[in-house]
Length: 251
Length: 344
Image (tube, rainbow over all chains, first blue to last red; front, side, top):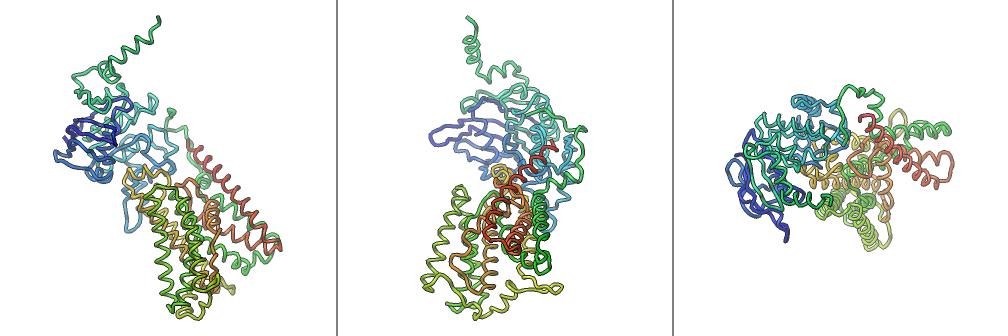
């Protein structure tokens, strides 16, 4: 396991945001974290990404207990996070975004020509067809933005890639494109943690599935042990869904 | 979000379109128009002497506008920048004339105080997350009070003067407030400082890591932080850069006039912001250019002196200022929208 949590928890004031969640992900594996809004998905990834400090349980990187002090700290350990909403800076060009925070230097200067060239090459290597690396990221589609962010994380030597709802704002076709890049990152030997509330996106690409509900784990399943139907039912809280169907039925 | 293919349906951008997406384009067009307007009516305006004349206010304003532009690209404002030029000048003249320091040491003291004010602005803004508009409005009022209060307490009047008699004046004056002759016309040396500041700022913005961070913290601070950009340090450095520019301009003006009014610089802060906006800076941050701000300052210099050359009442300058600001903001919006549309 590259990244592992054991009975990890986090409280904000009187709110128990996350309780006793255990999970782990190995290289070349995709762990899908599923849950409805408010299930604790974002708290969990913010702990893994170094944004929040956990206050219960243990966090292990390469089997060694750690406390991540900042997003930078997480990055230095090879844990890269791609957020749904704040992955990119819209007014900045693709290549500037690609190297943001880790700009290559030549002497004192930002090696601009190298940044442009590497960004173009890396995007092509991931099979991402960007018209022009000089264009502002704001002009890219949602799927293209996610793809650029993934390519960036891969290039900067991420071993663990955390993707926060990368497909949730996308149409069917664009979501498919992003899922393909997730698979490609996995094939390059990265451990991927894929957060989503859509079981149809999770099932085709996931090796393991962690289900969260109301801040705690309701189970972790290997792909072989669960069908997409069961996954959907578990996620929505099967009983609740049946109740709803009953309620909505015509009298 | 719409499904959209990245492909052959998008035409390559022509050179004209590449040009139009530059933030300083509006300012260049504006500068050409303003120059043509005044030059057509006043032969003095287009003579070398005339050019030297209107480049001078452009230079002192431009140094500030360029620093303020960097700060605005970084997503913050500094309303205390104008008054800080006064504070720096007052410290220089007061220490050199009342406390027996030579001009160089007095300037160094002014620099330390100015940088401390910039640091304080930056620390308060980054620590409290209050809008810099409010924080620096506070600094603005406090400095205004200190400038007047301390000057009155020391001199009994609202100005300090007599810098010419202080030790080291000749050298400092030649360096910051002197003139150079180019082709028989004398130009203020401040113009060179302005060009230097613009060149350095442009290099930092376009060709350094710090420049990437400045665009990023102004564009989306949370996103920048998430990829490891030291956002607080970047912003504090920007406030200190503005403070440095205020010190430079304050010292240039103090050495030039050898005396400083305690109320100098009040109201200038908005002119710096306006020049930066004319130069293509967005009020919301994350976009703009140092060269644009420098050209914005040229437009001001031309209008300031041009109105006098034409024999108009100087009050028209204010009207011009407002009209330019509106036009520039509209033009910026159009240019940006156009730039983003053609690439969609």
